[in-house]
Image 1 (tube, rainbow, N blue to C red):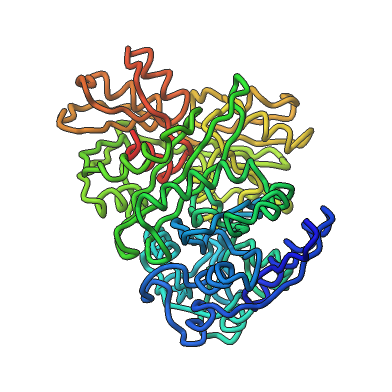
Image 2 (spheres, rainbow, N blue to C red):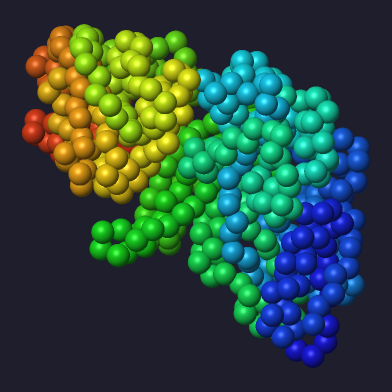
Length: 526
C-alpha cells in the first residue's frame, strides 16, 4: 500500500511505546506510518481515581480508538490485547497480534516491608495496591491476611505512589515494566509465575485493530502478526467471551503449548475464576492435543462444578492452602496421614556445594537440626511446595523443578549443577529417583534425616475424591481399605502412581505441580 498508515494510540508512555513498536515493525516491512494520540475513557477514569471493577461497561481503553477507526480518523488502533472487548463493533476486526512478552504479574515491594519467609515476599497484613479484580481474587486467595486497596494511574504513577509510602506493595504486569525499561532497583521485585498466579487473557500481547474493509492494511498486518501467539490467545479469549467477561470479571487464563513425546503440540491451560474477587476462585488445569471445542470444554467444566467430598492422605497444618481453598469452595475435606515420621539425628555433615530436597519433610527434618552448612551453599527443590517449606526457614531455592516427571527434573538439576557436590537429605528407604539422574554420581551424598512408619486405619468410603500423597500412604491405605468404583483418584507423583498400579488402581490423575495448588487443580479438574 502506498498511503501512510495512521496509527491511533493512547497518550500514556506505555501506549506510545506500543504504538512506536508497531510503527517500527511496519517500517521494517517498507510501509510508512505515523502516530495520532487519542484520549480514552480509561485515561479519564484514571484521573478520577476510579477502580476498574467499579466502572460500568467494558472497553474503557478502546472505545474512542474504535470510534476513530470507524470515522476514518485513524487506520490502525494499537491496544494491549487484554483491554480489548471480545465483541467487535460492526466493521472492525483484530487483524493481527504481536509476539507475547513475559505474561507474568509482578509484586513490587518496598524493601523495608519485604519478608522472605512469606509467600510472595509480602509481610503479614501488608497493604497492597491493585484495582484489578483478577489480581485481587488470586492475591486474597493465596494471602487472605493482606489488605488490598485500589490504585490507579499509569505504570510510572503507580510506582511513584509506592515509593511515596501510600502502599507497601503493588501489583503490575511485567510486560509494562520491561517495555518502559523502568528502574526499580530500590524495590524488591517478586515475579509471579503465570502457571501459579494466572494472568489476564492475552496479557503481554498487542492487538492490531483495523477496518474489515481495509484489505491493503490487512495484508500489511499479516506480515508482522504472530500466528503461534494468535492460536494460544484465541483459546484464552474464547473462554473470556463465553463468560461475557471484562475488567470486572476475576478471570485469569493462560495457554501455552509444547511438543509431547510424539512431537505433537500439547496445549496447556491454567485457569483461575471467581464469581467476585472476594470469593475463592476455582483454580483448574487443562491440557489437550486438539483445540477444536477446547474452550467449550473448559467453560462447561467450570460451570458444572459442584462441591466435593475429598480425603487426602496428609495431616494438614494450620496455613496449608489446599484445605482452606476447598472449604471456601464449599467442599468437605479430611486430611489424615497414614504414616508417621521419626527424625534421624545427623551425625556427620559432608561438605557440599548444593543441597537438594525431594520433599517438605526432608527440609523440615534437616533444618530442625540446625546444620552448619557454611557459606555459599545453594539449594534445589523438587517443586514449589518444597521450595515454600525451604523459604519458611529463611532460604531461597536456586533450582525448583517444574515437572511431575521426576526423571526430567533430575536431568535438569544434573545439568544445572554439573560437577558440583550435592547433598541429598532423604528418608530411610528413599527411592533416590533424582540421584539416579545425576551424571557425576561420585559427587552425590545421601543423608538420612527421617524414617517413615506406617499406621493403617479404616477410612469411611463416602468420599468423591481420594488423594494419595506418597507410596507409603498408598500401602497403608490398602491394608484396611479399597477404592470403591466410581471414586476419583489423585496420585502425588510418579512413584505414588506406580504404587497404585501395583494394587490394581489403573485410573488416576497426577497433579501438574508438586504442591497444594497442583493437588487442588487435580481435584477440581478430574
